[in-house]
Structures are given as structure tokens and as C-alpha cells.
Length: 117
Picture 1: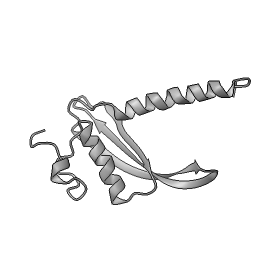
Picture 2: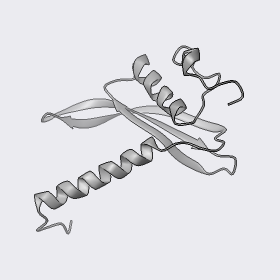
Picture 3: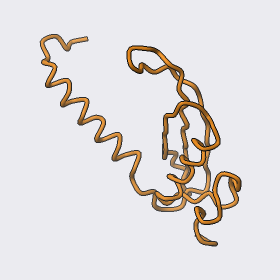
């Protein structure tokens, strides 16, 4: 792959930089109007403690009023349990993407944005 001779410390620095950039992207505030949203989940294989395990991945895609689509959220968890979905949706609301009228069982009234917001 063209990576021969790279030290472990260089690989670690590169991975940390990638992790920081991905974290900043996934935690960024979501401003503007995103009237169209798609939520989906799938299962992936992940290495944990030397074993391969199945994990749930929730992905949120939104389109703004200009039609530009963007991945606005991604969470990985052990399963698609209700608590996992609720945590994911609450993080989207906290970042500025309201889900008014969506998933009332998952988003208690205190987690929802004010009316009109």
C-alpha cells in the first residue's frame, strides 16, 4: 500500500489526527434549515478486545433547502435498542437539528426544541 517504513508513532499521530477531525465533524453545530432527514441503521463488524463483534451504526443524512445532502450524524453502539436511538436523536437536537413531532417516545418534551424552532 505504499506505507512501508512508517513508524508506529507516526501511525499513532495520523490516527489521532483523523479521530480528532472525525470527532469535530460529528460534533459540529447544525445551523440552517434542514427540512429533509433520513435515519437508518445497519450492523457492522468491529474488532473489540481481539474479537470480532457485531455493532449497530445509526446514520443521519439531511438535505437543506438548496437540496445539498450531508451526513449529519453517526453513532456506533451495541444494538438498536430504544436507549441508543434516544441518545442519538437527543444529540442531534442538542446540535441544532430539531425532530419536532418525531419519535415522541424517544424524545421527551424536555428534549424537544421550543415550538417553531
